[in-house]
Image (tube, rainbow, N blue to C red; front, side, top):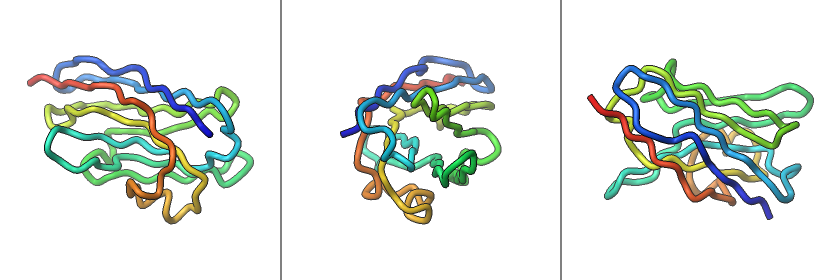
Length: 130
């Protein structure tokens, strides 16, 4: 089992930045795939970023087109933490953000589909005002 806890959400004006953190505990060595998803009421949960650990210091990442060049996902395996740096925030980025993890091959991990992820956090709210 892997437990995930998000932090770092809040309210910010458009153009601002936030950094989300996701702290993992439990059998974290198995979670080679980590992702960030977001959801607004009435819509599907969207995978915005994913990062896959290939061993050593080699990582692969992928992003949704809507956040590419604005968001950066990173992970610190020594701290069992994954981050989502969000810059140039827009009102449409407003959502509940969830951290997710799984033991997954790189392809399925980076496709950022919800059913490829096993473990989920409780979410942290991000609100961007215009």
